[in-house]
Image (cartoon, rainbow, N blue to C red; front, side, top):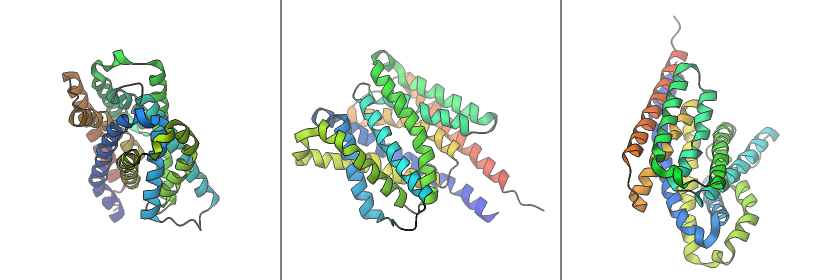
Length: 295
């Protein structure tokens, strides 16, 4: 009974971690766009993963001994998913506006919320969130490129896989150990593609500095926050909560890039926030019902 109540009371803190992670992530994405002309999208992926891996290895100092084969398989899969998700996202972002890219990408977690959720409430909140992300796209759909949409859909599928892989690694490894190892795997896999894409730009200190900033904002802090949050929230609630990403991206575009919000985008923000709050409250009620005292 005590552990169940403690888990339910931890939900607000987990929600705050997810929202903070999204704010850092979209701010980092705005900076990354400015680096595409210099290092390319795959060069940016490499910088992001390499610097994130270095930071996490220093902070976490993960233990490599005492892990079974299943744990190592999960962490390697997590690393592969990190490369896929980041690579496809940046390839889409090179071709589509930030808000539209994130709107398409968030369809992955939304689909996961419908699959993992239970009962009518899961469908209601997921459909409300879906309506929100469609509205949030506003007038951006006329600028779509087919290759960009395909990359964004691939990023959406990878994001759903990321949620599942992160949950497994978070359960198998303590603290940030699993994330540090997976990020290192991803960094190594990204090296050949990134070196070809970025070329001589990697010799410029200002490029490396901005790459490190993007890594901290878009990978290290958000992934750490999400890994901790996934230990306190059900996967279905977390997946719908991630539908806040388009709203955060629109706000980041407004604050950092001077992009103004249309009324339809404001409606979309309201819908995804309402869906996220409803999903978390529904998950909390299910947790309370599951730990009702006997006798």
